Length: 151
Image 1: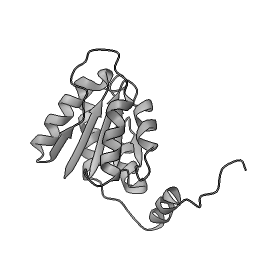
Image 2: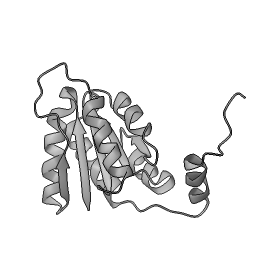
Image 3: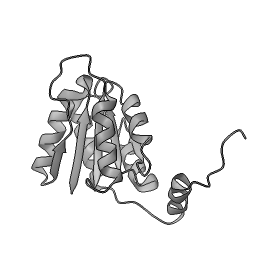
Image 4: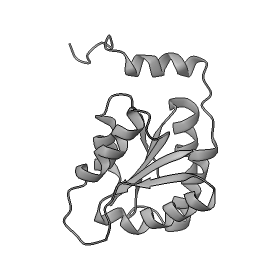
């Protein structure tokens, strides 16, 4: 599987650990940066290219990291066709794949220990999309016809 990965400075350490895991599992990994833990980089510059590569099919999936993972998930989810799940345990990763066909994973390095981050990645990689009633919902997410909330 071709997997894009990107982080800001606050996710750099886990990005490097996850990259090694992905290589060890035999995946083709493209690192979109950042290249160090030097502070004060703007995470959209590294996250959006990962999401765009997933959306255009260059990458099969994407993994984005930051301090909390929130901003990274928000940036990724602004790209049409990306369904980025912010995960903090194995269950959220499993459900994100099984029910939401998450093609992008966001993890907050400051929120969880490194071993758990690797377990989350493995669960997210290994869990298939369930399809069925969940497919209808994915189509609704991606539809231009989705009703606007509050209108």
